[in-house]
Image (tube, rainbow, N blue to C red; front, side, top):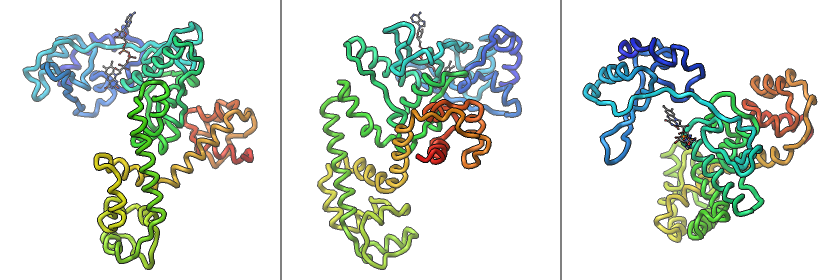
Length: 378
Ligand SMILES: Cc1cc2nc3c(=O)[nH]c(=O)nc-3n(C[C@H](O)[C@H](O)[C@H](O)COP(=O)(O)OP(=O)(O)OC[C@H]3O[C@@H](n4cnc5c(N)ncnc54)[C@H](O)[C@@H]3O)c2cc1C
């Protein structure tokens, strides 16, 4: 298949000079992969059905700018696809975008009032990136149309969307931007299991989430706190749990301890404890059966990760509070050994004006910022 495709390289707009720009970084064409990873004998392809009631498949990983007869011959060399037909050949794309620093955080353009931009036009790549901006631009244009002054902006520590938009609007893009979770500082706070706790109330206030959903959330939060309270108050005697503790390879109890302290042990899950402790089992009967899993899991995550979550929350609050402190030319970054090498280099070259500016430089982590704050006596 590789040989077949390579025959068409000379006619590809990617290689004959017609296309000058860089292609999509995270979805490279098959011919780019043949060049970049010339030593590889195989490349992964995925067959994605286009719908329930169609025989069309999207051949993920095979996007191409090669002449269609070359694509066709290459396709027929793939085991299992010898008889496949092409409905629409692959094509090359070039990226163009408007510099997103021209946007407000609401995604309204600064230059043309009432014009909102979302998606690839802002220099991003990806379905979720486009969808995330779409909902935010939609909400904000609605608020504007209703003459509601307050914009709907999510903070970096409230949602990945907050980080994505803040990155775009404050840093701009120099290559197609993708939202990696590693770009977010608050990864322990921004969890899948607490997305409802972070966002439902906001969504309700906007008129999106129903009252029923808000009430379900309130019930969940109450049940989780009751459960945690129970584990903090209930003492457990060694004879009820020692067998389980030994089986799980963790030390036995010599005397009674609070249930909470046992749950803190990484080897032990709440679900295993329920079976050993009858009062706990009885207590959990008040949790509706259909919600048991999410409530118990929610409580367990809060208990096990409380220390880390609190540390991240404190850091998030601290970073917010000191956002506007001026730090321009106040440090000799090259001498700061307690920050990462990447942060040292970037801070030195950018010489940020404020803590807020510094924390938005990619490669500068919250712990690097924390070091700066400590040096400033905060
Ligand atoms: C080959 C390839 C594979 C990809 N694979 C993935 C992947 O696996 N996962 C992933 O997350 N992302 C992937 N992407 C990226 C992703 O598809 C895009 O980033 C995303 O779809 C952009 O969405 P959007 O709504 O911003 O823009 P688009 O989906 O491009 O929507 C813009 C729409 O505007 C219309 N339009 C343009 N001009 C006008 C006009 N003047 N008037 C009216 N309408 C107009 C266009 O026809 C189009 O329908 C891939 C991209 C490519 C090219």
